[in-house]
Amino acid sequence: MENMYYIGLDVHKKTISYCVKDGSGRIYAEAEIPTTRLDLDIWMKTLPQPWTAAMRSLDISSISPIPSRGSKFLSCCARRSFGRI
Image (cartoon, one colour):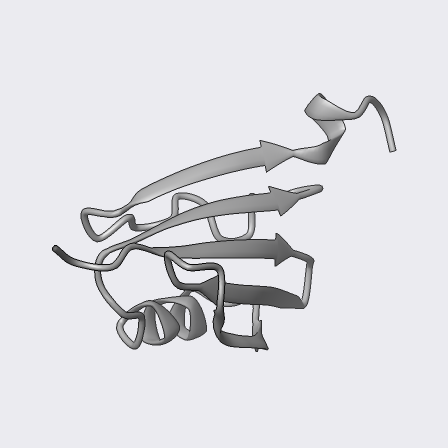
């Protein structure tokens, strides 16, 4: 059976902070990448498989739509979830 990887993304205007954990909760990788389509696409190609991700963002319009590559993305817009910020 394959080990699932879980990715948390904190999306900002200029950077995306991420943390990748394996199924046991151990950190596989964490860092920051620039918020561009090219950097996101390059980073996604380096991810272990299979994975699922959740994202927190105030505004993800600069990178939407995010290509899922067959994996699952869950998104949370802070403005909608937590009221006006």
